[in-house]
Amino acid sequence: MKATRVGHYRTQKTTIVFKYVVNCDAEQLQAYQDAQGGYYREFEDEKDPQNPLNGKPLFFTSQALPSDIELEITSNGRVIVKEDTEDAAAKQLEKDMEMEKEFQRLRALDKFNRLKVGRA
Image 1 (cartoon, rainbow, N blue to C red):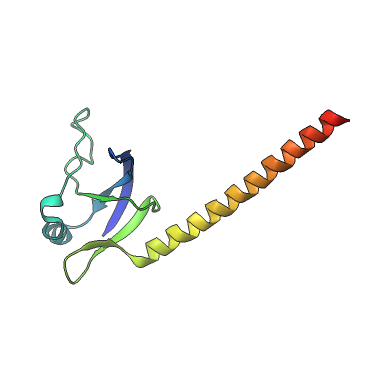
Image 2 (cartoon, one colour; image 1 turned 180 degrees about the vertical axis):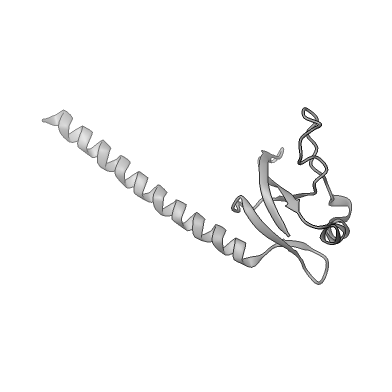
């Protein structure tokens, strides 16, 4: 099953929760509903009743994942994100951290150069 991120929100404990719309056929939908049980939720846009996402199943996670993911139902009935999607997210996080380090280095260099010019 594929899922696409449609938003996020913060809980009262300030945890960020990412919301995904699940795209699946009728058979997968039944299996997904069974696996989610009382946690099963559907997309509902009260402001736009014509929204094509209305009625589609939702998947929630606190993990920072890519906007498009694949889900699977385990043999014990849990819905999880497929491993390869998690690997892609980990690689993206690593890349983001490297970029942040580079930005910090450039900011420090810029600050140094400004101080240097101010003394001259």
